[in-house]
Length: 99
Image 1 (cartoon, rainbow, N blue to C red):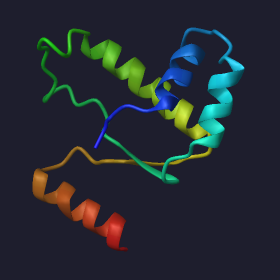
Image 2 (image 1 turned 180 degrees about the horizontal axis):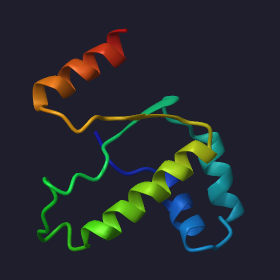
Image 3 (image 1 turned 90 degrees about the vertical axis):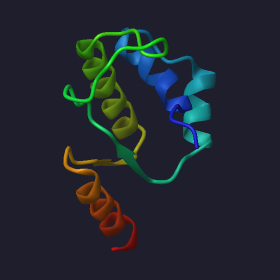
Image 4 (image 1 turned 180 degrees about the vertical axis):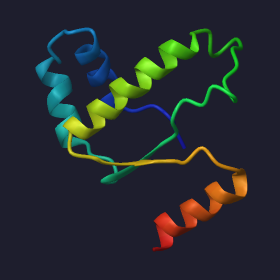
């Protein structure tokens, strides 16, 4: 499983106020993911910097908001994962996936 997508590139252009290149916009429209996308919101109590994550929590929040906008703009259904205990999140996923 990967946690990055082509939509992140398109969202990055939009966040910088730059037009999304036509080839990239076409790829986002053509190569679709599942309609429903699960998003984990920034959670300051769990946020920590390390060699892989050098940016600030404020930057993480801005990136999250940019990605939410990007996925919505391309027609995806966003499901935000609640900030609850692990067992409650497991129950949430079970409900979401099994109905």
